Image (cartoon, rainbow, N blue to C red; front, side, top):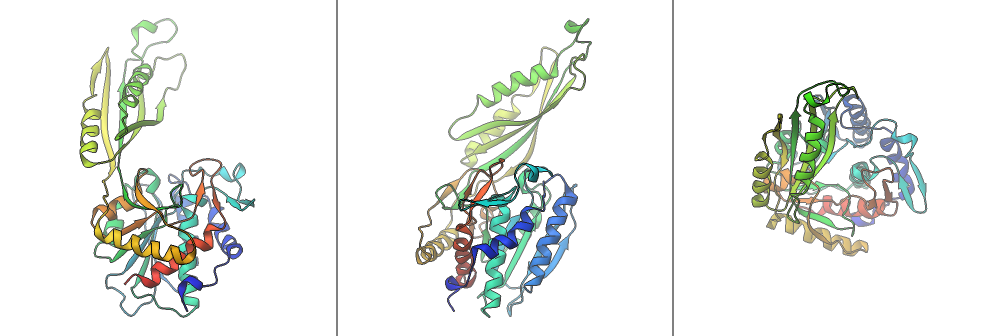
Length: 376
């Protein structure tokens, strides 16, 4: 049987995906993410995979690695790499419940990236049910910390990818439905201003506000944005008493750079901002960084195959480099052939309008099944 003709059913896939979406798994809630991993492990084991649970580190949840029976088990094969953490805190289901209407399915994390992960699981389910054998051994790796830059599991992902023939990453499709064959670098920075406390009522002039200093720095940092290197401050923590001049303020910066040269310049510009001004110390600490991933011949060969398959399925698969880092930055930068963003179509990821196109579930499952049975 041709894998593209396997009986993928959108309604059945939604039934299987719903428990995943309703198992809320924000990155910083290790227990919640581990519950999601347990659910995925159960579903993988039910279709014949041998599943290993890998304990979490650095305060994050567990990871799972699932291997399917294959005569060449242990030899280079296909790695399906995805994350199960989301940006949505527990309780988001109250305002963004799982629901289906007008051809769309809604829910926290359904687009980024539980829908795509489930698509690949369903592809393997139908492949095995039909008695088909993939040319290469297939391993799934689901990790818990991608939304914060993969600080704990980067090494795990790189070890799993090393020597593989292909890495497939079911991140959501790009807005035009396309795949990603390269990604810009993503760098994170931690900011700290240290001022001088005083009573905000009767001794205001004696203080040096860390909050006010940080506000000025934020405007300075975001003004450094260009088309090739962007800077965005997305987190601020400061203050406890309104009648106290703040003595410290913390913030976090995300920077995107198109090339290694752009990244190096951006990092240098951020670090150069450090110093003291008007009695307030400003400290910049570089955080986790996703390397630039540029398209390589192995990745282009994967894309050519995916485009041939998509044409047979009935759609055209565009491709290009993209911002918005993923774990594909790591595997692609290693030189391992990597095809990213081949998951579901949708909109509103990271918002309270996150949804997928239901029709993309069987569409992408056919693409996944085609890749899994034709990469050799």
